[in-house]
Image (tube, rainbow over all chains, first blue to last red; front, side, top):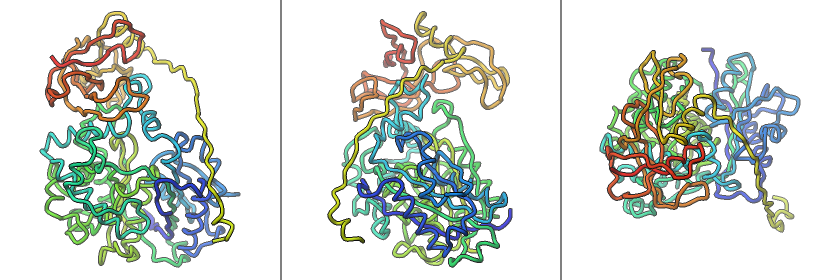
Length: 379
Length: 151
């Protein structure tokens, strides 16, 4: 693969409800800030990818309404309807395909629609939608299979919530910085067993943007280029009943491909920091298993042993993760941004010292139907 | 920040998108739903290539990418392979909380069937045997199975 790099990145603060800013404002803000970050002007942006979802925005072909805010006037612009990590994947392909630079912008406001009704609509209208499934109840089904098979405990999952909300205290963009205990999580309101309130990510508003450039154009950027060493995505079956929900095979496949591209043989020792899509606490150990960071069923112990805390052997979600801010569609792009900031050494109070190689991860579809894995590096 | 911004009271605008749809359920789906409605039977089908018995049935196997044409009658019993007791209500659920979603491996099927369980939630475990209980008034949709009940 030709050398391509992330040369600009920006995000809004994530909030429960952004009343002052409309979609256009949030996108304009992150587009402007990403260009400032790279010290690029609009002339330096060769093409644009927007990321949006019509149900979330309450508008059909929602992409069309935000193109000017993304600086796409008079430019080649295309769209991903799905998580921002996949939008960035498309952006990377466009740079590999001949554009010198791509701007990728994602936005969403969970506050403006109804997340349960909207996520119900991701299910099959013939067989599943009438059952009333939504993101929470379907994820609870996955949690039940995973935790039962391997004896993963609710306390182990609670530790993820404690860790990530604590990490969020060092991230000025996070929505839910909190000092909480395992007891607090265990005593929080039951939502859909085994998921309790503090196992869930919040409803969030926000936007984020990155600029990807080829080697030549990366030289014109102010920032230290963060090289895309490996990236892959894979998808599993759509129907929940067709999948083994405790065995994220599409994540395994995507990870293997991304590692092979990046020349990574032992992810545990070669990766310095992970930013993954923890929409619910159980996802962190399950996805770590899928990434081959530990063996199947060992994710709970990994967390219990403190390996994934800020000063652990492999810090996971130093930003506070999706548990601390969950702008849908934006959240996977944020993982890439946070991974890039870590390698730049610009992650502020949640900086992992000396991070040179980072893994970022996004998901799409119910219960992580598809996964996108990024390996970013300093060289 | 411009000074005028401090005086702005942020307004919101209410809206609702209501779009009626009439989804075709397809030939395979029609046969499945008619069997539910008219015979209180759950039918699946088997991929000749990989032997997977699918329920609901499919016109082709997504893994093998081959057409499926062998029908299998599955009966109405199976075991719970995943479940969650739902504690919240919202308007699209078919019944009031608490109730359970479950993935049920029907006897003779190779994939899980997602549905709800209303009664005996305290007895619900992985591996619990359940049976489909049909509605009296059936309309040709997935809720013609009212719920699964613990055997």
